[in-house]
Amino acid sequence: MNRIIALISLLGLVISYAAAQAPQASPPPLVPCEEAAEGVPCVIVVTELSEVVGTWRRYYQGANAMGFSEFRSDGTVTIGPDLQAGLQATATMSIENGVASIAANPGGPAPPQCVTPGEYELRLIRLGDRPVALTFSLMAEDDPCVFRVGDFSMPMIYYGGSGAELAMEPDVAAVAQPLVPCPDEVDEPYPCSVVATRAEDAAGIWKQYLGNPAMQAPGGMAYQRIRPDGSIVLADTPENTATRFGNYPFATVVFEGDEARLTVGADVPPACQTAIQRYHVYRYGAQPVALLIAPIHDECPPRLQDTGLPFIWVAGAD
Image 1 (cartoon, one colour):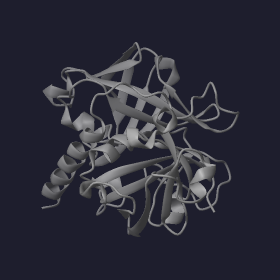
Image 2 (cartoon, helix red, strand yellow; image 1 turned 135 degrees about the vertical axis):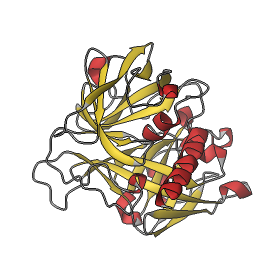
Image 3 (cartoon, helix red, strand yellow; image 1 turned 30 degrees about the vertical axis):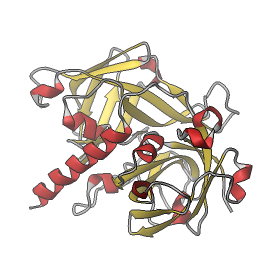
């Protein structure tokens, strides 16, 4: 029964995330690293393998488990559930014109459809020059490897041998657990994540995409203030999120465990009035860096499009 539930959950994840990841003209990074001040969260579009070389904590086996990937400068990708047990060279990756082609090696453990390459745009989220998270956006019409789609449904986290406790809770879906849990006390900061169970976990002012032309968001980007009380306001500048702004949406979010129930107060179509989401907050130590709002049940295509890539933290919220 648990396996059936896991497969149903994965199918729902892949379908909902595919809606957010539909091929599109690639938008510019929310906060380009070449324009960002030193030591602030920023994003680059990956154009060279050298930019992602290293070990990453990731979802694994169709996002039903967790594991690691190591990207090497020669394009070899080693994958496995446990660093101590060793990672196997089971995939290759090349990058051309900002598009990464990723394919499982023939004869490996992956199913045959995963030997066919999938094409993704990779974006590296950093805090200053420190790597934190890596996102994958589907660039082709589809990817025949449903397991790869599931594995890439949420960002990987850079893992530098921090010694963080990585044990999973066996009765909780992998995608509902943090890849690298954040410690209660931080001596030496490292990239980590939190699955929000209260609005306070995601509080802050975040830069996001907002494609609705009626909003006339500058450059198709806006700012969302999430307060600790669960109130949410969108606006064209961080300052304007202090109160409801023009015709921009506003909302409230209430948490029931790890599920965030969103209610939009603005005049939006019925399908966009509510959603059930999961908030993943990516940090470097105690410093918020990015926020991914992952759909659990959401029938609003514009919102799925706007939330397909993580938001970037710009300031705290009162």
